[in-house]
Image 1 (spheres, helix red, strand yellow):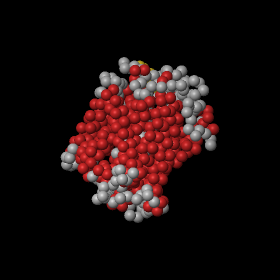
Image 2 (spheres, rainbow, N blue to C red; image 1 turned 60 degrees about the vertical axis):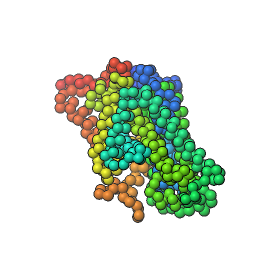
Image 3 (cartoon, rainbow, N blue to C red; image 1 turned 60 degrees about the horizontal axis):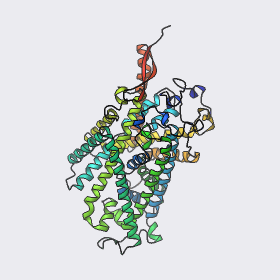
Image 4 (cartoon, one colour; image 1 turned 90 degrees about the horizontal axis):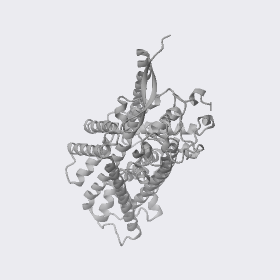
Length: 548
C-alpha cells in the first residue's frame, strides 16, 4: 500500500497544541496517545467545563443499553425463525450477531479512547479522511439529519401505548401519541436534562428487569414444567426437548441465512451510542473501556436467554403461524390473553427509553458540528444555554421527526424513509471501519495513531466485512417467495437515494468553502473562542484575499 502524501500527515490549520487547548481537534490529526501519558482520563482532550461531565459508568452504559434495546427483541425472533426455518439455526444466527456486535464494540472503544470527545463518527471520519478540508464533516452533517430522526420510535410508542390503554390505534391517534412522546422527550432532554438522564437510567433498569423476568420465566417453564406449565389450550412446545425438534425445518439456502443474519445484526445496532456524548462523560477513556463492553455483553446475554425462553414456551408452529409478536405469544401461553395490555405497556416504555437515548446523543452530534463552525448559525447550535443542554440541535431533530411522523402516508413512503435512515448508518460505519483498518497498517504509522486501547486487527477486519455485508445485502433481489420491501418502487431505491444524499453535503461544502470565498474575494481563517457557557468552539473569519 502506498504511503499517504506528506501533506496528509501535516495539521490542516495549525500546529497541535497541548491537551486542554481548544486546538486539539481530529481535523488537525490530534488524538490521545497512550505513551505521552494523556490517556489516563481523556478529559483534557476537549475544552469543556468540568460541570458538564455528568455521565458516569452506569449512565454511559444505559445510553447504549437503551439505544440497542427498543422493541425488536419482543418481535424480531419470529422473523429470524421464519428466515432460518429451525430453532437451532435461529439461535446460531443470534450468536453470530452477538459476536459481530461485540467486535464492533471493541472497535468503537478504540476510537473512543483515541478521540474522547462528543460527536462519535464525526470525529473518526475527520481524523481518517482529512482532505479536502471539512468535506467529510459537511457530508456527515447531512447524514446526521437523515439518520437522527425519532419518528419510527415515536410511532411504535404510539401503537403500543394505545393498545395498552385499549384505545383504537387509528392513524390519527397513533400520530398524535407519537407527537406527544416526542415533545415530552424534547422537554426532558433539552430543558430538564438532569431529570431526563435519571429517567433514562430508570428505563434502562426497567428494561433489564423485564427481559430478565422473561428469561427466568422461560427457563422455569423449561426446567420445571409442573411448576409453570404452558396452558392446556395452547400447543406444548418441544423446540428444546429433542435434537430432531431443535433442527426441524432448517433452511440451508444462502438467501434465507443472509436475511436472518441481516435482521439479527440490526437488532444490535446502537453499540456506539455513548461515543456521541464523551465530552459529558467523567474520565471518558476509562469509562468507555468499561461501559461499552458491559452494556453490549449484557444485551447479548439477555438476548440469548430471552430467545431460549421464547422457544421454551411457544411452539415453532405457533410462532410461524401466528400474526402476534412472539412476546405476546409467550405471555399468552403462560398466563392467558389478558396479559396483552400489560405487555404493550412494557414495550411502550422500552420504546420511550429508545426515543430518549437517540435524542440525547444525536443532539450532541449537531452541537459538535456547530463547534467546528461549519453549520449555519453556529453560535446558536454550539451553546448549552439556557438549560445546560444543546436545545437548538435537539429542536432541529425534533422538527424533522415531527415532519416524518405527520407527512408520509402509510405504505412505501414510511418504510422508504426508515430504510434511508438505517442505510446512512451502514455507510458511515463502513467508512469508519475501513479508515481504522488503514490506521492499523504500516503505511499510516506516521499519523501517530496509538490510543490507550487497541482492537486486534482481525476484529477490525471482521467489523469492516460485516458492514460491507450490511451495505450490499439490500442490493440483492428478493428471492422466490419473498416479498419485496416496497410495492411501487424498486427494492434498491433507498440505497441510491442515500448515496445521492451525500452529494448535498458535497454541494454545501463547495459553496461555503470554495465558491463563495472565490466569488466574494476572501479566504476563511479558523479561530477559536470560549462561549458564555464555558464551551469552546471554532469560528471562521473572512479575511480579504490579497490581490497581487
